[in-house]
Length: 330
Image 1 (tube, helix red, strand yellow):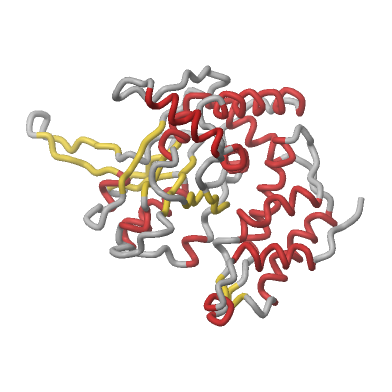
Image 2 (cartoon, rainbow, N blue to C red):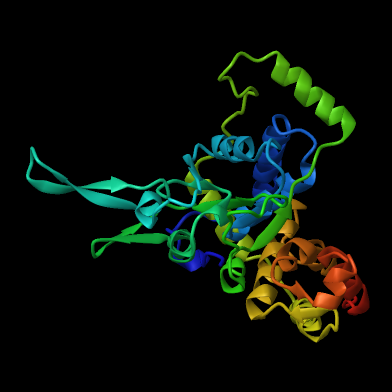
């Protein structure tokens, strides 16, 4: 679920050229530390600008935690991490009140969700009630503990990870919960040259040193203003209709048993606005919609059993749908 910019604190919205310069500086800082993952970095930045959350799928050891901490450093935000396990309780995520014998009062112990960027590692290893606690925070941007509602400080973004290989002892997220993530980003192994550079750098670091200097680009307030500016990016009715047509096409495809709903079309437009900002534009083109289609829709659709058994991947089916739906011409 995306965050409504109207719910954010008022901030001065930067002009398009200033915003493009800000995002470019953040991108360069992250790319200087996270090597060989340029597409992933752009998708994460797009999700941040759109006020959404990301489901990040990839094997262990590909720098997911490092990506979160590096992004947080670029705007001086706080970052946190939760390792989801079968015995994790909702209060371990949101926090709880503990009775203090000395003061004879209940003291609040805030959970790890009280941060700006949260890495929810292997979210599918916790039971449904614990998953639901995090997903409620993602949607409402608030936590209720013993009847008291506590707002999270913006910006707030969750990057939840899943291991695509290990499924034993996991609790898959229901479709309604998956739909709350604005994108599903696939992170793979970097190319040979980048991997060699990563190994070289890591082998020269002392234990406990994450490596890579990151300069502060802006503050959390500027990120909130950037989100407001992204929401204000222009989208003509023809491009909105194109996003809706793509979502509808997934529901009508014979290869898909469950298609994307209206929230999928909304996420397409919001993500496309962010991609336009990444390219320094204040308007959305059909190519922005196409660029957003796979990461936005891949976790919102289910293949029919026949297609799944044949070995065809979700992305293959989505690419065919994108090619089959006529794009508006400017």
